[in-house]
Length: 277
Image (cartoon, rainbow, N blue to C red; front, top):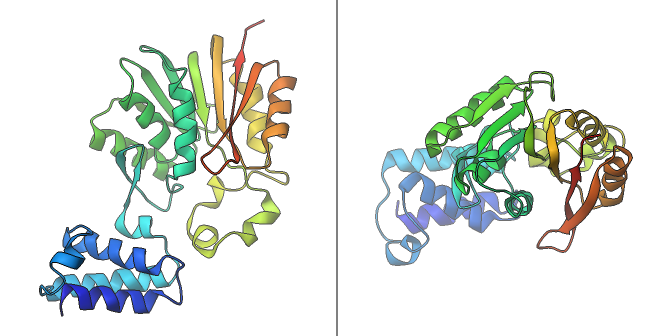
């Protein structure tokens, strides 16, 4: 079978199951054949090996069943870096790049950074990659996610400490910046999410309690004991949570609270400063 024929077969199998059937079929083929988007036009008539055909067909079946592309390939690009992915963690998303970019605006060389609910490690490792001499700690409840974050650090050649911790239970020391993309979906909303999110991404990284704010309350309260004087906390938030998260921060004594929008014009990041009593 030729490269183009295999691609078209993939598109036909996916079009009833995926919104991005054309894109997903191409990306899966490029991943298996180690090609790029130009090969479809320039070398579409080349023969594909039987091994590649079988692997592609298996990947297409997985994608048609609702499994996210990033879990099939085991990788996702984020902040110009490629991260390993696994069903134990959320897939790194472009929306979260907004959180990293805002934190970077306030990040200075040599700072200590804590990534709370660190997942794949993409937030912390991106901050370390684009700074100098910073010290990074990632705290994460799920041991599989901790292992994956350590793999990503090794793959990127970055030094970071990832610990298994129920929020701050195993965290020690003070930090200049705390960043967090905590679970923030309302419990009753989980069942309305797209199938590939609802059935494949970890529930523990999605469910933020009845009103979606449970983790913002806990982290905002507990973080005060771990922030250096004048330290800052940065949150990713849901599009409709800016006021509630800002109020939680204000009630906990944080000042200079700022809300930032993402590229779609939706509220995406809230950050604030804490001054010790």
